Length: 136
Image 1 (spheres, one colour):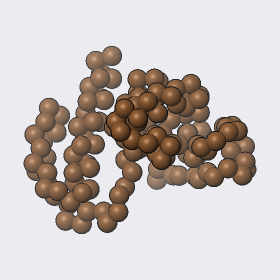
Image 2 (image 1 turned 90 degrees about the vertical axis):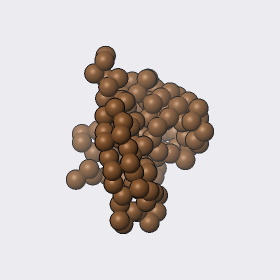
Image 3 (image 1 turned 30 degrees about the horizontal axis):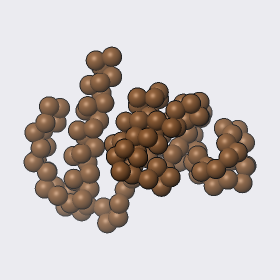
């Protein structure tokens, strides 16, 4: 459990640094996990959503709280999407405007905003807006 908590804390610290860098800020950070003194000379010209993966109620809530979107598996999404939405709402975000992706067979699928929800083999042919996203 301590290893999971450490991984969570390092991820939160990293996202804070990444967001500052992407905004073009000079970052002079000395935290418990990272030491950074840097600035991007060519920061992104538009906002880049920072997605996090979560599997389980606590992780889903944290993803809503700290990320701009979610990556999970269909089963976890069905069982714990309320946790993701609560984390986002508690952080002052609108969860309906956050991208959510489900992973199946190393493929990522947009999760439609309204039912019917079915994963995957039929999701790509369902007529619902969906997209294939490759990590490579």
